[in-house]
Length: 408
Image (cartoon, rainbow, N blue to C red; front, side):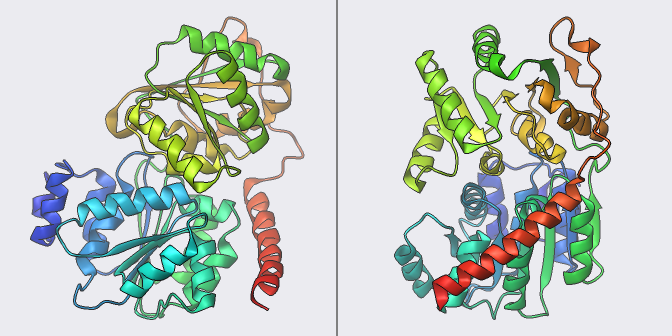
């Protein structure tokens, strides 16, 4: 298919598509849009930066009846940044349709959300926790929803949202169209589909290689105590427009950001301890190009969709190997080029070995001597699926406890 005009989309939706500058659809868009328009459930997988939001956003807009002021579509996202990003993109595509889209997430004043829900919305994009909050308060009724999307479904499961998803889907009519979209497709997602979906169509694009062809990937072995000075050396050497540095924890993110500030770098951070206004402010600075470097945690990586990012630095190797592909997917988006650098301490050899086992693309040594190291997965390795199930179980009991405190 050569362009979006060949799809059976409403003229006002196509007007928004043209205004957004979309021309030829990506493979995930072409296959998913046509399938969703037929009413089938969909499991969609494609590399980061290949247009998954439009792949489910355009059919979502197509099915909404603007004469019906009830909520008819729901998109669940794992983070507030991603919820904002998805809502903004769908809003642009539906600019001329009259469809009202509302974003609901924690950190935003709930009274503003009360007022928005009272005015009415056709579609809701939100995070599971705040969606459940409104359901329990009686301020959000999902009884008219007929189109549901779980965006970044692998992260939803990895962050322990499976029981929240259970709760939300139980409040939605059984006659609905459900789709799961993600950049990677672990077995947990396939298992989840059997519980909630009716013979879903699997649309797996480049499913055997969750990597980016336009991305040059390098690794180097660095002692943990030497990572900060080596980072400064690397940043002073490479020529980049915009860089994201990923750390495992909020504490390390704050510490590294302060260190780089003291070294006279133009840097902001993004992590869970910031207020919503601080997060929004820092992202505006980074998006606008006024800030060159963003230091972020993994959770924040899912809400960053910025074309001009040309460098990713994994200051810490992620424990979950799939997170590596989500991190590096912040660059080399939509056909652009980019580079990724991974710093590996002795304690992270096993974590890096898991990443190597998942990719067929060569991650090249950065410095002479890096190629002498051998990376092996420990014999007592705790698999990612068991980790995810453990986190999910812990999340369930924590949520049950918090619910008793909040709603008793």
